[in-house]
Image 1 (cartoon, rainbow, N blue to C red):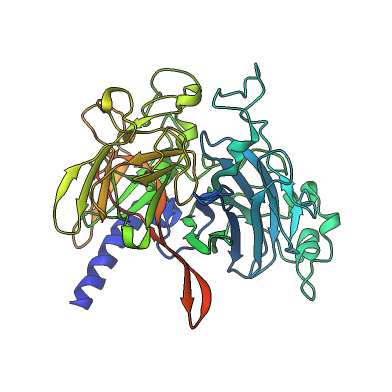
Image 2: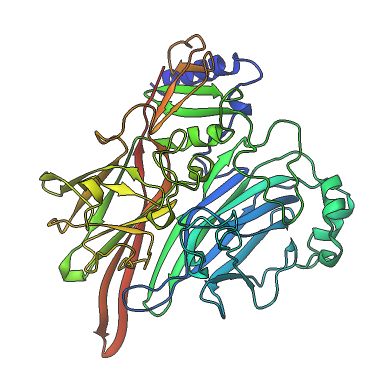
Length: 491
């Protein structure tokens, strides 16, 4: 049977490669092995939990290859994915860079700091660099999105790291950034002009993770970065100077590959599409998200779900009314950019019920309205914008339930969603379906159902202080679980 499976897979991959220059090896895809050219970290936070204890978010990125790299590090706030800081980072071969996202020392926002020796442009101050609000505030400025201009918005969001290319061996930049006895010798001399000359094609091999640690509460949650591979257009560098907003998720190769959809490999060429974010959106599309929740009173447990939409900012714009495509509504000041969803809850004994957010949104239609959303369960203070008990998020919605534990399905197709909303429709004659063990369809159009999402769930267990051997021990625990998902792509 293993031989049959291998032969079937080889046949399917051969069919994909027969598509020519747009084969799977040259197409954007989510790498299930966790290595890629782009890393998306679904959530960071410096907020406080229900006990008033503040989180720090500890980030790492690893260059697993034998090539030095230039990467863009970008932090985005969670309401409208407005950039709050970016810089260029240079990783020598097999290097690891670490940083901490912490509350700012003044101003009420967040900051990033590092003790790492790897070079950055610009250099990060020893006390850390505060996040800024220039991209979403400013009164009458065109940047003002009406969602609130305070630095408080920077306290939660998500992170993108995008490879800009490998650094040529024996180049000036390579010599400056490569560690010698643990320290790069030339960080102060690194320049954008020279680095641009010395950077070549993307080679991938990045991986990373984030730790959400709350020392005072004695809890810790971790997340793996989602790895997108084959991002870079073939044969070119994506180097952009420090301070440039590029590269972004719109700068990918126009081809995408999604594996394992009803036993098929689906490949689409989005070069004729109306939005250059479509290739990345396609590989992140899901029509349902599934995960568990635990609310057991005996352990004072709580559950928060993180649901982040890293390409939403390229489809939903500032203003009232409907978004042009894929997402449902534009970003309407403090209301946000809301997409209607369904909630189906199940306990552990097969009882099921339809769920709803509390307080109920207008028209009693369930909606998630931010770009990095946190869904909580049985929040004792469910007011709009009230902090969630576990992660302390204010980009939150609450699900009341009588179930102490169970699982939930979050779906993107309530009856209020009609037409081309929550659908990504590929150009004509752009898509092939290659069935494992079968054949390849002629190029056609395709519809990708759902929304591009990443995320995970966290569960807390709080025993407070317990006496162990006569010694008082803080006995709080946390666990985290990546979301399970379904996909629906039809010719």
